[in-house]
Length: 437
Image (cartoon, rainbow, N blue to C red; front, side, top):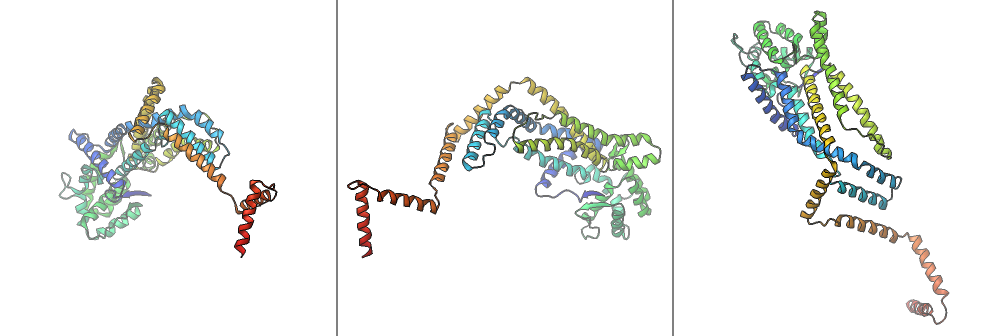
């Protein structure tokens, strides 16, 4: 089953980002179309390269943090080992203080690359939305459906909407081809613009067999369907494959027709996707030392397992998703691999000690601007720790208080005559007698 969005995605967070990215994608396609090479697959590749180049500063910061983390890991491991098994509040606060001191020593934030990830992830998810529904963002592709193609008196969408009973026919067609829109396409709506968008969304998602079914469903539009299919196939063509088709459909269809070159081309999409994902994982910095902390080691093992399963996931999924999405995954993995290779070479040549000193200076200036002396942070932490320990000592149970009172009374009873304790006892007894009267 395939899922496709109804026109542009309108989510509160990803919606505006997807519209901005769609505007950029539309510009790339428009420029390529001006020079006579309007092609969605090539536009996806170029657009993916541009996006990852724009994200490169964030990627660099993320990789720099990773390198610094590897360098300070032995010190963090020593702290974890020092406080291993200690769960009391004083030990936890002392461990946090010492960990913070290590991060300050190397001039990095404990949040690390979280900010970079928070910026990158919405962009990449929004990019996925654009590629899953190209006509909603690329006007040149949508116009193939809503404007008459040369030689036709009407456009495909107008011809369908002028056909009696088209609403039910399109509803049945979408159900037969198992094309699901989100939200569900409403061909019975009174809004003709929304109906037109629904028709474009469903038809664009059709594979070559689906277009044959469409031609049979609207026999009076056979010529319009054929010419529109040729135009859409031209812009969707990627090494002879329609990027709206899934590799599995291309393989099964062309194997029966003995078109083995297309079968091989379709097989290469998931295979190349798997290889590029593996290469990307191999180039990523890997943690090779054990931290001595069970939780950290478990997380490291989970990361290794994820690094193995993600390429396999890409391999399997690429058989069932449109070729265009597979092209996007491959292009993204290739760009990331090239970036990672160059970053690895770069960090091999630079002196991390210089970076650490610069980071320490930046952190120091930042604290000074905020009016915080460099030693105030550690002093405040120590004061808080001592206060917590003293408070724990001061807190006594009622039984402990009663025991201490009995000890004091016993000590006063044994006081020598004429001593300060004996005189204090006489005063206490006098007060008690007067209070009874």
